[in-house]
Length: 298
Ligand SMILES: NC(=O)c1ccc[n+]([C@@H]2O[C@H](COP(=O)([O-])OP(=O)(O)OC[C@H]3O[C@@H](n4cnc5c(N)ncnc54)[C@H](OP(=O)(O)O)[C@@H]3O)[C@@H](O)[C@H]2O)c1
Image (cartoon, rainbow, N blue to C red; front, side, top):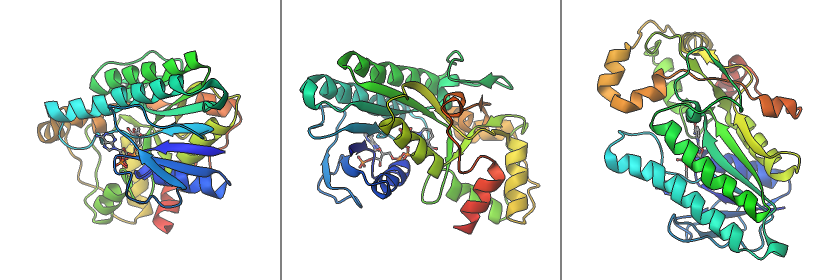
């Protein structure tokens, strides 16, 4: 298949592109810098949240572009997080509607995030759980509404609610690795909050499976089958790196330092990948121990 990937230059996008190539697909990357080459991509096309992209010749689209949620959430930052996703997805869906029906991409896989569920304590969350509240919950709901509008053009849509992605070369892992390897790691807040993590290889496999298999549609949680509490995350990292983790970071300190963004570390989301498991998907890295062992090995 010829697969268009927005955000192909990013952390997840690089892994999705690499796996697509090894599976024999061709990749057309979309970037705000279309003149810069993207490893392995047949072609790089222009991406902007203001104009519909050129989708000609594509069989499927995987949409990962969006401003990073890391950094202080100033008013400008919040606007960038929201508009890069909501308006960007609106343009992409407009382009799907405008494509001639006989050559329109047949599938559209849109990133979303488990931020959709908000802060939910010990509740076990599946794809059919109700949405939560808060900034990220609002953004992800609006983002998914835009994506699902592609169904009206006869396109198969899958929204992947991605958890905390662990992998080399981006996301949270390099920071976690550095902090824990220095012996400075520690429980955050009460440590009782759930982290629904996922290895980046499983993210790439899930997104590509959804893009290429007609039986996948609707929403899917892109997380491992074994979420952990922050206490367990801390213990696993410290033991795997043979370092102590005795410095807990109190919730009030995190809230003072990070303000609203502290929710990224203190909110609890115990998410199950029910749809993927029901489809018979087998994670390569089902437990945090296997994932961390692999990442340390890398
Ligand atoms: N990593 C995680 O743990 C995680 C968790 C949940 C959900 N997600 C979601 O998964 C998607 C991919 O995540 P990622 O970690 O790969 O992100 P990333 O490394 O930050 O890459 C995202 C890509 O989006 C493009 N981009 C950046 N700022 C933009 C802006 N203001 N407007 C439009 N495009 C912009 C960039 O591509 P160009 O510079 O080439 O245009 C960038 O390479 C994101 O939508 C993210 O919200 C990620």
